[in-house]
Image 1 (cartoon, rainbow, N blue to C red):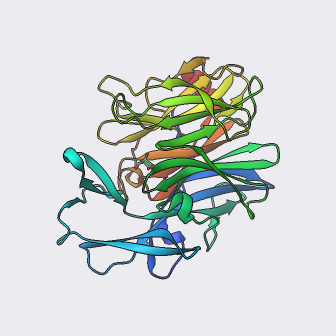
Image 2: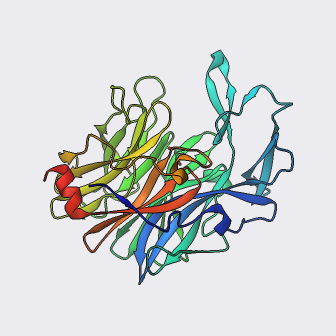
Length: 358
Ligand code: MAN
């Protein structure tokens, strides 16, 4: 019993995506929110771009700035041979040593926006030529990442990592048609990520997993919070900390797909990385009325990087989900592979319950 990878994987790659600016190249299309709208499956994809460079020693990064009340794209350029005070070993970020020798992020290496892809069969996707939502200078000058979509009634709530040079926040946007979007602002201040909002009120309140990033004590862990209105969140409780043992989930854990209601409980696919930044997916089944109560979980990953397209890419050894759908008793997991492609893997609900022993 295990997930079955789609034979058409990867479903979307950078070659399928038109850059948002002729100066840019697409570094990745990955980590997408998922929704069903009318008779289509919608993926709201994270598209990461950087400036094309002839010289392999140079990286040029777009950022959003506000000039005289107008947002525009500016760029920051690093020459690895000249600016040797920076650390370039992680393809996702440029680091510098701050006060006291502390490793700090100087910049990301790309700017991400959100773009819509549509499909009738859930396999063949057409991605828009233009961004659906571009980052704005005041809230996300370094980009919008890892969107999750929660449908409540006819409204689709999109939360995502809003990256600023002063930390990563989580912001919310709503839409009813995937054409017009209304910004609702920051819902979790820095540093927080990987929010997954349950698709209904539970006990009269909205519920969400979130992942604060502790600086001093502890590792990045999943917390569960409540809200009366989706904007103000509190009543935080620890849900899951990274393992203290030498295993697949001892580096960090965070929300993955938006929780899905089944007759036996909430199905929660989350992500976990080890100390070497190898990202896997894990699985929980939670009590329907008390989602902080665990009914069952897997000790082993539900999915780990195995194929070449998961092991090799912009940042290898990553399977990372932001959304899954339950269709005809099958869980369709859409996931980012190696931080540059979108893939799908399926598993039947029957197999899931058997694996969980429920
Ligand atoms: C972080 C996030 C994700 C990314 C993983 C793996 O958790 O930035 O967007 O997929 O790292 O690189």
